[in-house]
Image 1 (cartoon, rainbow, N blue to C red):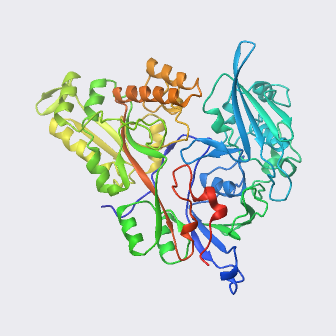
Image 2: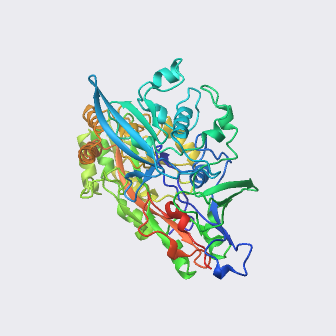
Image 3: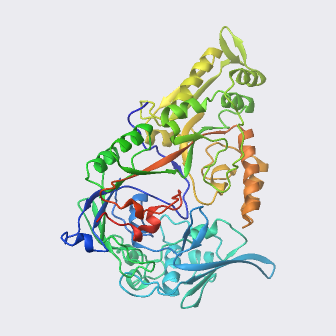
Length: 557
């Protein structure tokens, strides 16, 4: 078993909501330790975090780690439940499909709950929500949000014309905002999960086309979340308890995030330097944690590992199907992850509501079957080589194993290489670092490659599998698949969409452009001498974890 478990780079699909959970740094006692047993609050907990750029703005953050800080400081309009379904947060919401003079439209109404206050005590109003929408839709906006990709009524006039407002976004009263889009877009609701920041703090100089005043607050945020920003010094972010938090002031007095090397996450918890961390899950890590009597949670990762094939480079479907039958997945995954990952049968995270839970194996490991497909493609053995039109069957596959093949899917490739050599074919394995690997992948330079997808709460397939999808690395161009993907985007009905995605997954498998490999788990490690683990929420999922109930987290007293 490998001793060094890495976090592999993901081809990420940007989510409207992301559930990021990370690590812990040293727990500290509160200043008054003499009465600690009598206090209902407090203490300081320090969580470890892999990296920080210091852009603590829900508008302009540049890394997921900075956005983790944002999520502690801010409150979103809506959020996700344990199953990844939309539920209210700062606002209740309704969705209504209407016919407006022959034009099908969808109206989203957001009504702020009572007593939602920013940390400075000012109430959150519809004007604040409207301000946030206008910033995210501004013609000069250059942040991570994809809200401006929605077909909001009047958006074109705001972005490209003289309009200073978006006609499809209306303030109904002091607590209510209504947004109207053309047509139906089931993914739109996820993009409305914006963090709401106060106009009176961020928007004092805001006018259309000038976001300089908003950006000036990037390093000094203010929001309505459970904690308030205090400082960012020496790679440590310090937050303090927000007594105005609408869902109950946190029981922690302070919360700190310290940049920590991922390789040190376990030792930091074991030695008492940190309260909580997220080392890579492995059988050794579980055993070490058990031995050290540390508390841990194992939660399915919102994503999956796969092997992809470029249909423009390997054009013969029979060759692709032959390669699929040479992927011996189960032994590889068991040797790397033990029981901390499972083989999956369709290219979608198993935690998604659209994953077909009754899916059966599509391409089993079968060398004889692979030979049949290669023969059907016109390959014949000539002097010990598998040849067609004077060319030997030769496949190049990329893997981001850092030059040491340290990757869960590496044994699949080594087995394929051996099997193909026995047939007289060649598999060239290019083991590179992540940057080189993804540069080549983005240029569609690999015949075949090994990677992982990060998934979103909504399983929209357009970006990855539609003929015009910007992340269609497989070069799969299938009219039937395109039509299904588009049809699934034209209804908000979950059962209908689920059935359509099941059909789409079957086409993807039949086209032999992607072999799903594994669904793994994430590990969250707690020091039970510092964190009161009985205050962690029950039944945590990739969408809902202890950060959703951070106000309830307690230190050991």
